[in-house]
Length: 216
Image 1 (cartoon, rainbow, N blue to C red):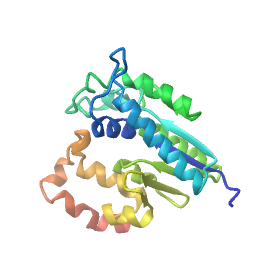
Image 2: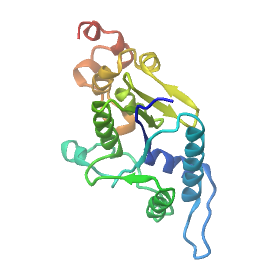
Image 3: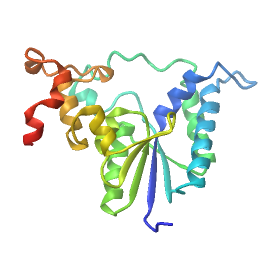
């Protein structure tokens, strides 16, 4: 068994919305909806059980979005503007999910004005600076830019590990250039448009093959 610390960072928002959409409406006797709480708790329990039977990480945390808006909305007003508000019956479950995380004796972390992705990136950098291994539990492609030696992505829904080869297969570039590809190609999921100058001349799908990446 390795003595190297191994940090697991869970994308809490990903778990919450998967749980909410996967289960039919459920409620407590007082009428409080709990389907997302139930699904989230089951997913977290399964992950904890599975990893402790295998790698047994030394550190574990669930990272949440503190609010819908972040500092990016100050920089670009239309950032994620096309996304609807959280469903009315999901909103009261957010605090219950944080309580459930605490009941599992797992740290639940968030910070005002920042997204969960920002915290995950920060904690990953800090952990790698100490030579810790890091596993990010998420299916969010944006987090693929963090993959590196000692850092992998784990899609627990597909039971799939994503490393350097998988990132290159998806984007056509190394993880450190994923942010450049996304900035140029845009990201419809976040309402970020393609770079106008490039959009007039070529298709976004051709960007990963441009010579600029090979020269960088």
